[in-house]
Image (tube, rainbow over all chains, first blue to last red):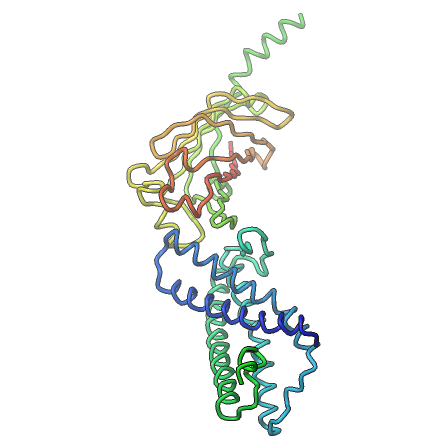
Length: 179
Length: 178
């Protein structure tokens, strides 16, 4: 993988984290808010962040697949399997979580207009009961995503501070130049 | 002799005008307004209409539509509660919004424009509402849409102006039975 693509991959990794955290924090705030102009703005920002994660996903997958790095290097077979499983689950949830949010929006009768500019099609018709189901699934799946994000971060720190194998430096390039 | 036939017809016409009753189950007054640029549909659950016209000459008819502002449906319960407040429709003090047509112009076969006053929240402003009139069973279906400025009636000001568009489109389907 050339250096240019490498930087894109690293940049998108951190951008995605930022978007997920922002969407999660805003989403949690929305739970307890009563209707106000701010709430409608936060709803919009939450949806824009989530849809951006979804839209970046194909590009991220493409970069990941074109990356020739051997993710099993220096790992025990079970570690390699666990790593592949967590990475796979992270990508899957970055598809599922925003998709469930989009479905919830459609079912609730409030379409998503990405950044107030691009209207996204409604995935299902308006149906209050269905919106409640998607809301539960959206919340459940995001909790699973967050759990895996934490696990992913803990594993990275373990590689950096226990195994000293430079895995974290793949995503934080200045770590490499320091050591 | 021909001229007398026309005069007779004109004289006879007012007699053909009749009252038409609204079929509330099949009639709707709905609206689309953008919030954060997202088109959101809503409507009113209760409306009353008075129509007196001769189907052969609707342009000389009389039309009036009243909408129960508290019967608003914004698509969410908290939205419904919000827009009943004084900053919006102030439904306690202004329970009805009414449109009274002063004249009707015939634009084409089956197509008309009603000119009149639309009163919401105690403010009355002139409105031109184009509509079509088509046969609907034993009655008639009046169908049309027009654009309103929310701000000109003092509905939803303050911080809401940042997120809710000024323009909204009102769509009406009124089924009028003999």
